[in-house]
Length: 502
Length: 106
Image (cartoon, rainbow over all chains, first blue to last red; front, side):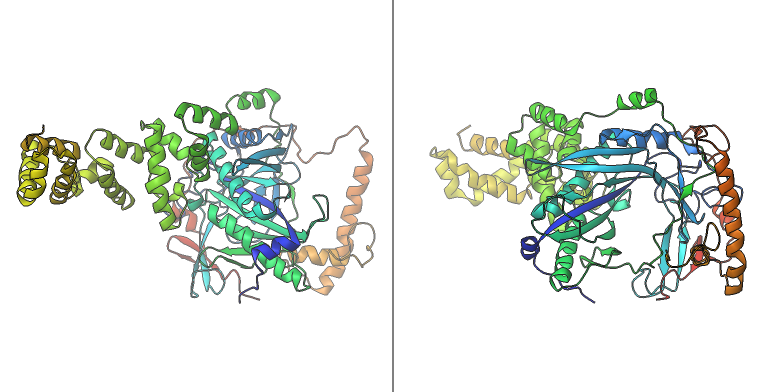
């Protein structure tokens, strides 16, 4: 079943979108939120579990201090108020990935509330207001067996691994974002990207969307155009688990066009959960039951309230990283980037990558050149975000070190990136294994130069007569013979020496 | 939440009890609902009378102990092995808990 869409332009001509984003951040604490089980990604199934996170009778939870600290630091970085007193609550529902039959969460007393984030897009700033950031725990992971697709629909049964159950999550919820118009999809993406950068700067999460450590739910509604920012909001849909930046943008765009088609045809939007399909780029109905939203929240009796002292909050405020706007200005000055270079770097999602590459020893322009040139092109071809492409800043810096040392030229460096993506080891190992190093040894070069002179006697004569510019043709011939691995500068010197122009 | 029905006595209607039973996956038949709804109402009435005793100077509480900020350090504590964790599972496969079909009744 495929939904009808109207074009994006027609959607905008008739409707104003309102966005709401819920982002779940999985913290990088060593242990779970309410028990001492480890949180390592990729462990064998059900090896990081205990009576508490399995919900066995009599097990008692105890709050992880670092989890609360991370929550407060995220709240402060989002300019939120920090609650003087708040409680955990049980969110009751039955689902096999939650063995306790409730999720420990926060309900009407979030630890952080009323903040904002200034999102930068194309050189403009758009303020996104934050409703709340609250603490909760992750669920287990289900593997659906049977059926054609490995999806939950049509599966015969499911297999559950509880290693992830109980890992601390911070859910960050925006207020309705209105007035974004045609930029709504891009603002949604830019908000999640900037939030991810902030989380990375805070050091509270691995922040890997591809591993699910940051997950976005996208709420969207449309209102008739021109009612202004105070008009009644339309009925919303919530698209769950949008797990890449590009998909955030696509999901917003898709739901806008789908809503517009329904409203345009005189229909009404059903308030429901939608599932995002990464492969086809569409959403489908989650088919929730009508009482599914009735979670019977009540205060968690097994956990006492959290009442962060103002001294603690201020101490944590002192650990916050530099605010992003000031930081950008400082980095631009340090690096000597033009406004355009800086904007392109931010726009490509490469700011953090360039920064880390420079920190690992590369020159600013070299770092920028690799990330915005070769690697951006590869990421685009592979249809992934730059940060998810699979090459790290440390690797880029190591490649540049080899270039600076004269062991690689840019052309050979590209082959090193092929090796890095293929997981062939460090840049040095790849150079050795693939035999990529530049040859500047005179013995090997001299023979190749002699061959080139012999094969191009007419060109050699021109150079002997003083036409030094003709040397390029001979350099090309040598490079061809040396499979691109000759030191071009040294080859030129040898040619000129041999032809009496040295 | 059904709104049409009139409260039995003080607190909770028969329809509300049926709704809660459904949320809690408790299968109650008509006779059980007739029996339980008035009883739950009596309990709620009793609670209401206790609430009446507390004056404005007594703040509501959800916990019996006057404690806050009970935390543990972020240090790994050994838990269960997969074998122990799965020992009570009626069905298991690939070192995971096997559960019946989750969706598909519609």
